[in-house]
Amino acid sequence: MYERSSETGGDRSSVEQLADVVRSTLDRYPAGGKLPSSRELVDRYRVSPVTVSRALARLVAEGLVTTRPGAGAFRAAARPPLTRPADTSWQEVSLSADAAADGAPRSVDASGVLATLAAPPPGVIEFNSGYLHPSLQPEHAMAAALARAGRRPGAWGRPPMDGLPELREWFARGIGDTWTAADILVTAGGQAALTTALRALAPPGAPVLVESPTYPGLLAVARAAGLRPVPVPVDADGMRTDLLADAFRASGARVVVCQPLFQNPTGAVLTAGRRAEAVRVAREYGAFVVEDDFARRLAHQDAGPLPRPLAADDPDGVVVHVSSLTKATSPSLRVGVLAARGPALERLRAIHVVDTFFVPRPLQEAALELVGSAAWHRHLVSVAGELRRRREALTAALRSELPDLALPHIPSGGYHLWPALPDGVDDGTLTAAALRAGVAIAPGRPYFGTEPPAPHVRLSFAGVAGTAEIAEGVHRLRAAYDEARGQR
Image (cartoon, rainbow, N blue to C red):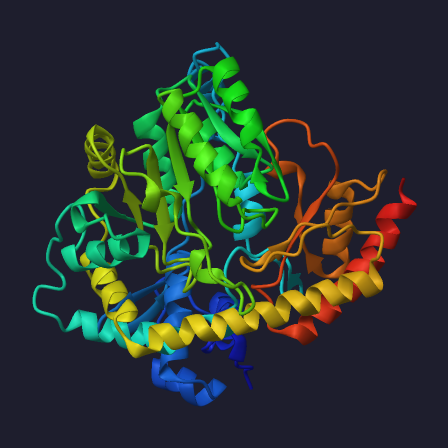
């Protein structure tokens, strides 16, 4: 009776459908009335006991059902109505008083982040996802790692605040020979690491140099911390280091954040000359380089040898390194690191401890089990090949059906393309038309801290089911493009 979703690795569709059915029958029962037993629901709707348990848990979370161990499930009592309408208008005054150093009210805009995090409606093809499709995630390896981790002695105890020593050592080896576990802090993913880095290295109201365009989550983190993003342009060779000294001089910034490898969204790789120049200029101005190395484990099969992290060749603590396992595994495996040296590490540690105490030990143990297994290398090889196939499929489809979209750079790593739109085609208009056509894309505007020089969209090929869905998604996008072009 109920569909199973092979793409989500379970009975998520069955859970939703059963919850809908039970929800629709609740009016038959008085408040406190007993619902059919789990066994009855299993027999009546031909679903598994796990599906019944999850559907009831969803209704409990909605406040519609209560459960009592050993007694069953019951219709919850109706919530009492409010005695008067809520009035939250006072909050406008309170929140507007929370001003940044320049006197402007501090606001937090998460729209650019939500564009890649929010799940689109059913049937919509996800060209906006920031994570691997479930079919690309190492679900079996992660499940096995979590099971092994849970059986380790002390696995549910309090971990060291800096993280498990063995996990820190593993991350340190991935940065370079001169790095050790003592230089590493385990964080709850890359976004948390970036947040800690900016809070630790720049005071509220300070400028921070960012690539332009750049990841919207970075811009959101900076603004939420009361910082002022100052753009440094990016071209096909990465951040324009010839403009970096001017940006430091004009802004007075003491932090620059960059993604030297498969930059988001352009996919550019910082060239050897610019890599050395970025660190040299930052050192000259007494500034830190926050290196967001988010895509190192997403190199494609044809990428060739990768350049070392900037931190690998920096003995003086100019570079603060950020990386994580999340992008290459699952959005829920939120394990990342901050790597730094000197007093900066102590500042980072203090902020990290105050904000989060520590990353849960079972998650760290599971991550350590995963990266130490034979399945880890097989997974990375598989992802490298599949990302290449998807990149080639998306590139070919765009060139065939949407030749007006310019693709000046095809990256050999990461999970997206960054097409430029023709003059007169608005990225927001195209994004809205695409959603109506059944495909979700990310508009380019949120990737710029100031006015964009040209309209772009970002198209991810990692979050779709495969090459057939890529072809169908581009076909739908073509219809949306024709609609958007007709609105000029």
